[in-house]
Length: 168
Image (cartoon, rainbow, N blue to C red; front, side, top):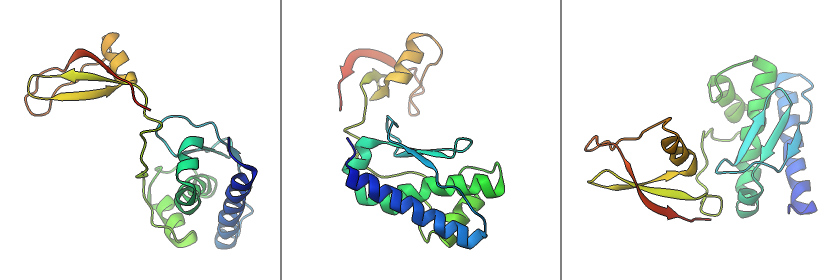
């Protein structure tokens, strides 16, 4: 699914980030493994103990330049923060320092990509004053009686309307 050319660009960007971190911290950080097996709405995920980053292949294909400019540095910064500072807040001052001072990228905790292509099935719920869509995860929690959700306006418990919204 990911072309060799794009995979090569991803690898080059990772190597650039690691080289910047090595120069800045005077430490030989290892090049992380890359996996293109992340699903759902997240663009990327850093697996700290495995020195690996996982990327969402669908969002990557749809947002190639943003992945190179923002997502790769974001995930590499998590790995660098962990290996240099230990266990710290995921988007804390150490991570922000790496993003700003090492990678010269504005730190942002979330992406703004269109997620329609990766959005799963949702379910319509109502309270009486409004309707809401819940993800399949939240819907299943309601069905298993593990959770209930309330409207913030009228405070009534949301009830399933029986409508499934197939998206993606």
